[in-house]
Length: 315
Image 1 (cartoon, rainbow, N blue to C red):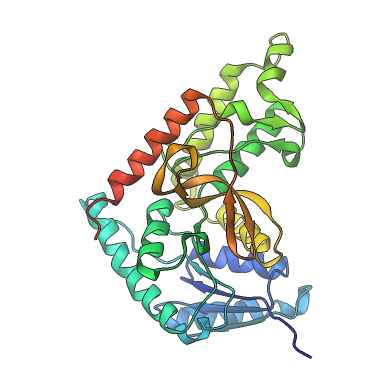
Image 2: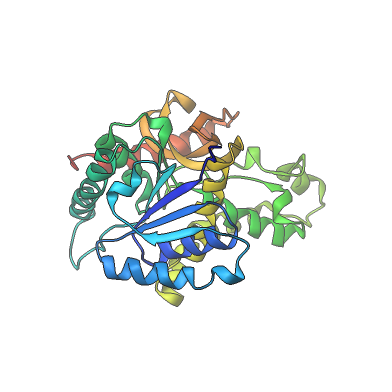
């Protein structure tokens, strides 16, 4: 009897990659987990550390440090690797160096015969996801980035805290670049089935749109504050990557704001950007069409233009 195994490969065993791996183990998301890093000794040590906790886990996951050849039968390859910006290095030069790092990863992954889904976490994630698509030659539906999934989770948490409701009952998204040009389409934001803007208008001043604008800015700058306090952010993105992975492996058809290629959606083309997408075992089934206001469409256009400009000159 053939038993399908759920296999995930993580490339890059830094704090993001290992926070993700730890989430996968604790939530029993896959059956086989492969760790790949330019520092093979580190990958081996991380695998040992995770394996030593298996006795306490609700999982019989196989975890090991592997090679790119192990990607052949993987369902998902998740790229968390990248280089840090040097002093006085321009953004474009950094992107060029990261593009070469990605080439050194993607070439052997595809050479292994890998025919699954690429999931990218390396920042700037929208640009790096597009680079992955170009270098791999994969159908864009099978290449996605973490996009604004974490930003949207931050938004739901802050709205829930303000309105005193469970964040899981807040249905609101951050769209655009995972970065300074991201925005919240408030016209689409709901608590259960109730428009948050309607709640504001009906609250007699108890719920204020000014506070919603503050929440949007807090979401946009959250990473800066975390990095200032503890030098890096990794738990939240590890959980976001796990949520995306579960949607793929479980063929859930869940809606998540991943970085996806737009092909006429919202009037935009040939750019990877964070938008609500239906995610299943094939990757991105479709971009969810939304009735954005003219102002929101302009914000998305500006964000897409920022990303297009950043991509120019990399290759």
